[in-house]
Length: 343
Ligand code: GTR
Image (cartoon, rainbow, N blue to C red; front, side, top):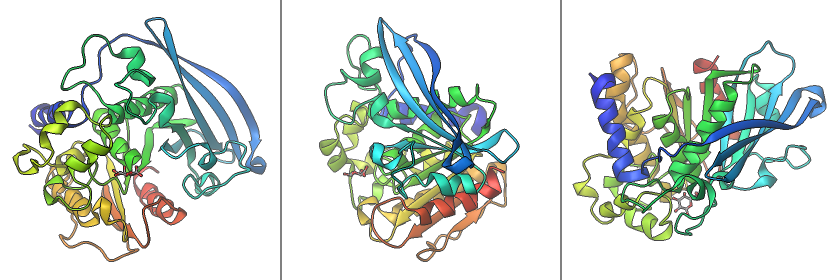
């Protein structure tokens, strides 16, 4: 019943009211390996830089995927794909610049591939009335109240990386975790809701329009986010500004769309803007759907203390000490969970 009927209804609720619908405009897609280094990270990994080239209506768009694969393991391996919203200094393929935001060496050392694409390749993060990015290629005709926004475009980009993984024999495309921080975390949840090939979604401090329950109106509200980022969601989402109590849904239903696949929701103790408690409660209230698949998926209603990860079957949560960010400490918990669900 959930899978055959209700899941599709709930997915439609989120397409119609929050992120918008992907247009059905045809496009072609090809992959070009622009760089390969079998001796990256001092021999620990193979670097592949792949352009995912999308063509439609005489225009083209390139998604630049960077991928490191561990050398000393049997293939295929599970992978983490970061939807990067911070820019290239965090994801340097030469590894001269290193950043905890994308700790490639540490992920390789734990036996995973690690990949990244920049959200800006798919759609620049500014309001330009949907002229640039993938909107400029695929949007035709008048914009509708449920036309896709920028977060749905970024999620679509993650799915194009999944298409590529299905062609790369080094990657176990059935064991890919999509990771995002903040606006990227909202995107990771929506990508996994829409694309059931994604084995695990990691929502790091995604807050409003992501994991946090909207009805709590704690920290960032729908009105604030619509005013500050009018391009992120579909126009129908504006109906819920200052009107959360009338919403026929809340964000626990977004997390439920990921069941029975894995989901990891995280918060940071000082990041009240992203409502840690509302994010935990959202995960907690998604569990009735997880339990349709595995009755032993159980969390306590009260939040875990700071720096203590809680896990049950396919769900995990932690609240890290400190401010809004994604750090190695967070990644270590992602991988502790990954070790139980991706390996
Ligand atoms: C903030 C925004 C949040 C979050 C954050 C980020 O300005 O209010 O919803 O997305 O940006 O992406 O870092």
